[in-house]
Image (cartoon, rainbow, N blue to C red; front, side):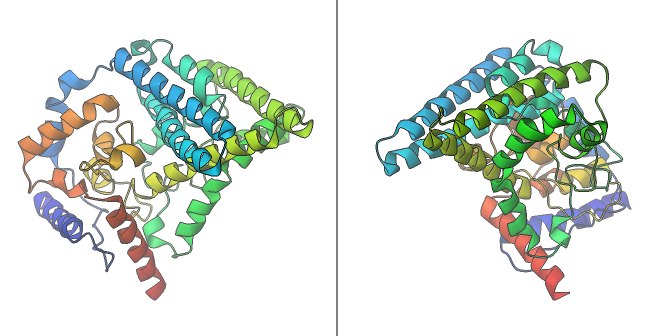
Length: 373
């Protein structure tokens, strides 16, 4: 019975993947789906030697991306013409986007295996971009919890495929305001909350996490994490208050400030586009098996463009849900091994899709069906 249910789900996924068309996407039956034990066993056994992160790869990739991003940002600010500013701005968005996505790795890896990486990332990128890692730590791990994924308790899940068509453009438009929100969070609300316990509860619960579920409210940090939160928030607040003060007094040129804000907005929009296709968003709020979570998630393993819009291993997002602790640089090899071992007709292939465009079309078509219904 379990194999029959998995086969039905796989057939629907494969048919949609091959068609890659916006018309009436087949909805995968997630609720009640049994785990594909053969796939889970292969995932565990074939990747045991890929679990250790490489400090050399992490530091080189992050530092190189951040350096390129900041250089391009400076180029966009100082460019003599709009054309050069635009070109530099695009490079800055792509490079800083890649560097910022190491926040995802920080939430999963053991810090003892990458000593100093969390501190270095926050000092060099998280705090300057007002995006300290505490905004994601303690949030993203809930998304991977076996009994919370796709439920009302998941801070990173909304059944977007089952919502009205207007929710998708709103979802993207909101991301353009992210730098303004961060400036208010760390430059105004954060400092003011030190004088009001009620405001502090609101700031911590509602405005201290990178979440998309409006019903989720995070708890106050405790122990060692509270210490990490404290110094990171102080640093981001210093950056935000300094920006507000120097722009208001004319010390920081308005062009430089606006360019910085537009670049952060570009990073946020690109990440929001990736978020739209990270899952199929078809769960209606019920707890799912690991296999069902995998098939509700997305791999885009082919082509060059996924390296730009889903860098740092996120083009293998479904595989990441099978193996959350696997370092990003190991995902390509893990995907190759599993594809070869399990074959083209396996459940594993059911989460592999060819293009961003096809996934966006599938999601849009699903919301149109909701309107028609």
